[in-house]
Amino acid sequence: DTEVTQTPKHLVMGMTNKKSLKCEQHMGHRAMYWYKQKAKKPPELMFVYSYEKLSINESVPSRFSPECPNSSLLNLHLHALQPEDSALYLCASSPTSNTEAFFGQGTRLTVV
Amino acid sequence: GEDVEQSLFLSVREGDSSVINCTYTDSSSTYLYWYKQEPGAGLQLLTYIFSNMDMKQDQRLTVLLNKKDKHLSLRIADTQTGDSAIYFCADGSGGFKTIFGAGTRLFVKA
Image (cartoon, rainbow over all chains, first blue to last red; front, top):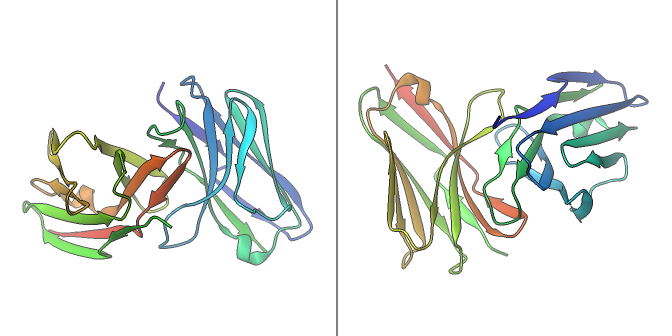
């Protein structure tokens, strides 16, 4: 199994809603990532978990809250988002640092 | 900070070879990757090369690394319409922080 699975594929939410994005991998990878990608731009790193502990937070606003319940799962909790937060949110995993990352298909988020 | 640069567009005819170029600034880079992204999809790892290699071939893909010039290229032989996508060059040497180029949009004309 070499897949990173993200759900949902599409999400439309209002600015007062609370929602969560989910990511799962069963490759035994110990690093998991959240990226944000705007149209025609490269992915921007948001968070990194290493061995289930938050390792990197790239100064992401607190309306985005990551969670790593176990070594296979990664969540991104969303609350009080703004329209400019609309983007493709990508989850990735890698065996450790300095190794290739495998990406999921992303969640297309629209904030209305 | 360290940077990765790519040209933004490339247009080729079906059956021709495509060459996508990339330059990076970190002379100590050891892990360099090529990712492919089709519309509406995530990034797919195509291939990678380590700094102790000059070339890597994988079916239709050939990666060349010139460490002196800090230049990386991806050659796709016999380009097909299904190869139309955005190709990202990436430097994975920064621990957990991968540096992506802006992406090269490849158009394949039938």
